Image (tube, rainbow over all chains, first blue to last red; front, side, top):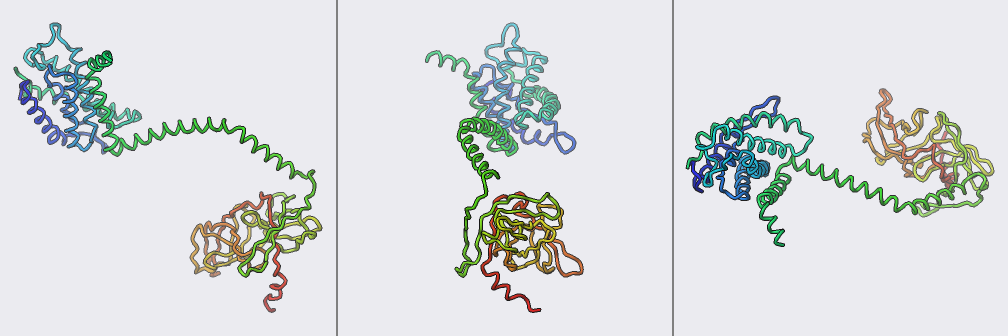
Length: 174
Length: 272
């Protein structure tokens, strides 16, 4: 499950999808009849797509994950839009965080030679991109910017925390 | 061509992203009702602004035509000014009743003078005894009632408006309920209909017609619609507030109605 081979990636896809739609879908916090805090694991799957994957393919994989989540959330297209954006933004996060001597050619983002702080900032970028885009698409109009901001500010740290914890179990090892 | 392909290849992830994002937008708008509503609203705002801009532009294109229409209107109004002289042409129009015998004769008339607005309104029309106008003939507009002739002279007649506190008009509804229409001097848009039996159910918005019982107006002229009804305790009757279909105080074109059977019907007055 932690490897870079296709089977490991498919297993990871299914495990994260399962966790998202059967466990973390139940998790939501809020007040006054509205929920403001959710847990999204989509960024985790997108972060763990192997580095060698061609960029368009990474975008397509992200889209597939998002649309799968949508089928269970009954919000067809919203998660898919956020995941697609996140999959596209991944390459820029990687470019910003690239170590001085570059990534190892074979590697997926590899826990062994990349520090926890690197993982933290990498996931933070993706989680932030995912949540902001998701809530923008959910509200679908800039007039709801207050709700978008509030939901993003509450959801992003919670999702990031969960993603970092999950990394300990899913971190690919070569 | 090669350059285009190169650009496509170099930005392949972007194009994948763009295509998938468009697909997502399509799915969001078509399968999520709140987003669908927002999208429809936004689209209507955009199309609305474009439409109003085109209407404005078309308005300028039609300016010549509008100008011509206004000029004709002015010419028409000028010809109606007092200095254009007294019109001696008499247009006579007739309607036939169901027996196909001529009963009512309509005589075109113009309102030439009005009393200042008061609870007792009267007006003057430019038709008189020389055209056959007599006391008690009804005056109607192109829709609705105007009044009843009170004092005809040779060329003019004074008309008591229906908005006069002593004017009484027999009015009825489709369900054969009938009563007396009068004005209380308050609101020139509304009149009161009295003496309707209490047990009749009158719906708001019912049309009120002339009954023709008083031989002043032809049967079935629309007067207005029922606005509200109010039962009068102890009298067994109810009063209706009628919203008039026309504005009797500001109508210029009128028809004087002569009932050819009036004398015959007068012989059937109730026995004393």
